[in-house]
Each structure stands twice: as structure tokens, then as C-alpha cells.
Length: 453
Image (tube, rainbow, N blue to C red; front, side, top):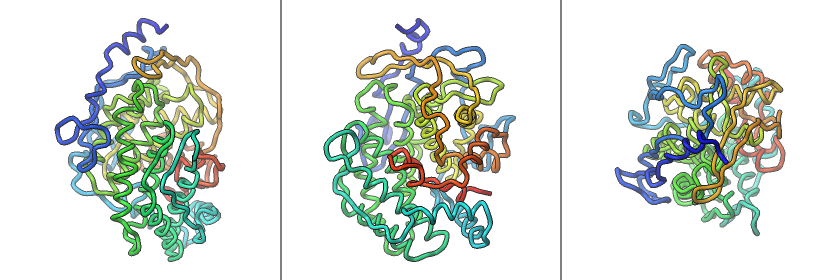
């Protein structure tokens, strides 16, 4: 049984009906058209213990990202609020024009670490212009008959990697291959299905698809209107369905990654489609949402004076913890490229979580506060983790360069563990370089090439 403190935390969970509004009114899951106006909610549903000594499950009310500054330098060059954003910059998802130009110039000059990153890209079979598309009408993810989602994620990474080679080296064959991949999929795909994992497919592959498309949006042969329609009608409805209904489970049932991949997709689609409502809704959910993907729920405990904050999946395993860091890093970078600073939100809450996960996966000790939540349907079943998990400890994924180059280089903050992890993974590869299973394709990668300053 949960302790009285745990029961008290769960007692006042707001209704799911208050989660999602469009144009000032309640919206059913899957509504299209204008998109999200806001995800609203009043804090964590995950039942968290009051905290051990030095752990703070809640801080003072968070300030707006545009004015959120602190002694440790959380304020950055990005100073726009979502409400003030009047137009989107393109390219403006994971890579802006400056990133791409710098990589182009440094690679042409034969300079490392950019050249080492370029060699990782060109050495990956997915980046070859000879890659051929295998589009499917229906993509299935989950342990059910007909599972075929490996075809989708391989083709997405091939499109992205070929698009990068086209943008950086100007090779026409790579650009043509990237566009052909995106065009054939948008002409074919109509359905994502499977068990609950279908929502992971909608989130991960939605944000990755959008990033590949952003790189070739000005290619003359890109069927952009049709691709936009595919994202709007196949991926986005599932993203919103999950974020509003959570597959009809108690809202704390799903780990942070599930929310985060769907938020990444909503944000990426919003930017690609110039849909401000989608972008604003994703940012609002990250700050105030009830699901485990919001900042306060994904990072439930901070450790005063240690520069560390516990990640929500730390008691589960380290592979998923690192995946979550990668997803939130991608979200923060996409927002930054539109002038909105989520990296610095709540006094660099994300940096402290990244330092925590990096430190533990480097072999260091970290504090751990028991973490409790409810799983299943209805009121849910009480669960609790009392120790950090060592499962998959030390796993390498291409998620650290983006964080190192933001916090250590852009912001000039101390990032000893994040930087050490970035150095350990350098030069970062991408899909196909980290094993054949889906986990090796959860991040687009190549951060050494794209983010080195």
C-alpha cells in the first residue's frame, strides 16, 4: 500500500477532460484543422514521495521561458514566447541555416571534428544515394501479426541522411534520393496501427519524418503539399489522441518517453506546416501538462546544490532514460531554433536531469528518491521504485553532442558529465550505427557534424 503521503499526492488529480482545448473550447482527440490551442493541466499525476534529504520535488512557480534567468545562466539568446512568435524560421527544426552552413564550410576545409562527423555520415549505408524506398500502405508496430515498422524507420533515416549529404555537399543524387523516399511514402502510407506501441511509432517517426522533410522543403521535386497532408492525417491525429487520452489508461501509466515522442512530433509538424497552434500547444504541455512528458513529471526531483535532477525512468532502465534525454533534447533544440528557450526553463531543470543520467551512465553515483505512480486503467494499481536501475547502464546513444554544444558552448555553463558523455560517443553516428533494433533509430544523430562550434 502507498504511504499516506503518496495517497495525498494522488488525491487531487485533475480531470482528463481539462487537458485539451482548441479555439477556446473542448476538443475531441484527433481533431484536425487549426490544431492545438493549449494543453492545460495543474501538475503531476505521478505520485511522488515528498523526497529524501536534499531532494525537491517541486520548486517555486516556473517563470516564462523568455524571462527565466538565474545566476547559473539559464537565460539565453532565445527570448521569444510562443504567443509572440509571428513566423517560423526555415530550416528550423533540429538544424538551422547556420548549423548547415558551418558544417558545409568546415567539412570542405577538412577540419575536425566536423570531418570525423561527416565520415560517420558518408560511411553509413542509409546515406547512400542508391537506397531504394519500400513504402507501405499500413505500418504496424507492436507484437501483433503483420509487424513491419522496421521498413519505415529505415527509410526515414535514409531520407534524413541523404538530405544531410545534399545540404552539406550539394550532391544532387542524394537530394533526389531523399525526395524520392519522402514522395513515395506520402503517396502510399494511410495507416499506423498495432498494439499500444503504435503511439510510439506515431511520435518517433512523426518527428523524424518532419525533420527529413524540413531539409528538402525547397527541393523542386518534393511533393510538399502531399507530405504535409500525410503528417496531418496519419501522424498528428495519433499524437493528439495519445496526449489527450493516453490509450485510456491512468495518466501516469505511460513512461515519459511516450509523451515526449508525441510532443516532439506535434512540435516538429507544427513548425514544418507553419501551424502556430501546434507549436504553442506542445510548449504549453511541456510546462503545465499532466502527463509524464511535462518538465515537472519527467524530472520529478531536484537535488539542491548538486546540479542534478532525477529522471522519471531512472528506476526503470538506462536505455529508456537516455532515450528520454534525447527526445527532450530534440524538443528543446527545435524550440530554440524558433526563438523559444526550453533548455533554460525552470532554472535549467533539463540540464540537471541530463547531468544526472550522464553521471550514472559514466559509472558515477547519484542520489535516488523513491518514485511512485499508478499503472493500468481506472484508478490504477500502485507501483513504486526504490532504487535506480543498472539495466543497460553505460549504453551509448547519439544524444549528447546537442546538449554539450548548447549548455557548454552556447551558454558557457558547467556540464562535466554531459561533456564527458559527448566525448565518449564522439564522433556521433546515426540510425544504423547503434544496432539493428528500433532503439538504434530513436534519434537522428550526427550531432558532432551538425552542432560542433
